[in-house]
Length: 124
Image 1: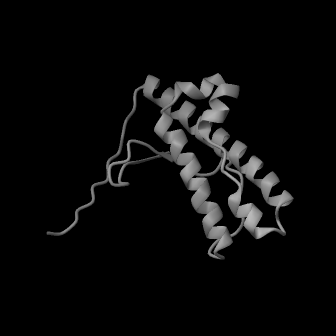
Image 2: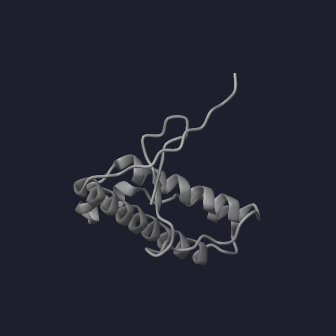
Image 3: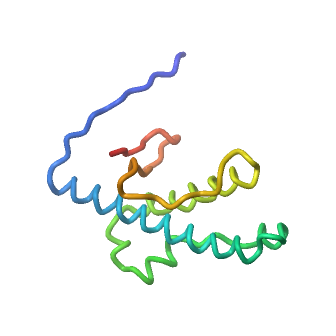
């Protein structure tokens, strides 16, 4: 049996557009906050690779306590931010990619949510 791919174009209502905009902003904010924290850890333990590997990644839950407006968006989208950042650092340490960069509002914005075999991605 062959795999099939379907591509859909969404025409969201105004409320849905606002939710997408909020989610894009929250995902970008959480990613940038986590990256800033990881950058500090990297600077601190740059020479000690073993100590660097033992450091834990920050979680979105930590930021939800500080910034309650993060609770308004899909929690899976924020959880995937942590996974994406971990992949970015893994690729950096294995030499496959450069050091992760901060996300910009002007760049392509996307987030993954309700992952069903990794095939549902919302892109703007």
